[in-house]
Structure formats: structure tokens, C-alpha cells
Image (cartoon, rainbow, N blue to C red; front, side):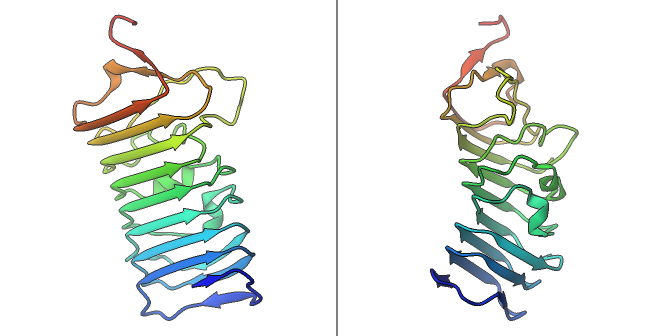
Length: 193
């Protein structure tokens, strides 16, 4: 579905629909079917969601520059495996992502870094985390940050496009990693160099 001049107030979809892609430039109301397996929503304006639990949803891609809280999506997907958030620059609260305990792959592009998301034993099944962006904190007065990662990671990509001094302590990097890509950082080893 690709509407640049959307005049309808809302959309509902068939319950047998498994793959849904919505690209819009205007405000839209969407009622999401429970049987979706893949969902992609790209909007330049506000998207108002209505949905039940989507137990079959395994892939979710959202490009929503105006979203401030993931909770407002009302998306409940206990079996989600891949989550991509792109250009969600106003999204600062990532706590609602902790519901995705079966998540295997998280991609954040041009979003605020999810400080605290990986603490307290959340997202234990996460194997791949990819972040590219320039905003690591909502509070500009904080000048450095130590990053914490889930214990099961195999792939870690973090690209800092901003000016913030981020310290990666190489002694904290996980033994489970098979691929590591870091750019735009200061590095510390066990000797403090």
C-alpha cells in the first residue's frame, strides 16, 4: 500500500494477511490484523495503531520520525525475531522493547542509542545488535558513556556518527562475538589504554 495523499481516516485489513507494508506521507489510523508475520510501516507523519497481540509477527520494520514512545504503537509480538527501527529520532524510551524476549536481531538506524535496554537481564536471546547514529543520550550534559551488551551476542555493529566521546572497554566485550564492527569510538583495554 503506497498512498501519498491519504484521505481515508483509517484502515483495517483481512485476518488472513501475513505480510503488510505501508508507506504514507500523511497521518493514518491502522488496525493491524493478528495473523501478520511481517510488518513494515514507513510514514512521515503520525501513525495511530490499533492491534491485538500478534503471536505470528516475526519481522517488524518501523520508520516513524514522530514516534516518542514505542508503547504508543500498541504492538505486542511475543515471538518477534527481527526488529528494525529507522529514523525514530524522537524515540527516547526503549523500555517497551524488553517485551520482545525472543528477539534475535535488533537494528537501530538514526535513532537515539537505547541506554539501559540491555541491563537487568533483558533480551537474553539477542544474537545480533546493529546501531548507527549520532545521538547517544537525551541529556547533552553527559559527556561519556559505558556500553553494556546482552550476553548472547554473536554480531555487534555500533557506528557513532556524532561528536560524543563514547568509551568502549574491550575487556567487557563478549567472548561469544563472532563479528565486531566499531567506528567513531575511544577504546580501552584492560590496562586503560
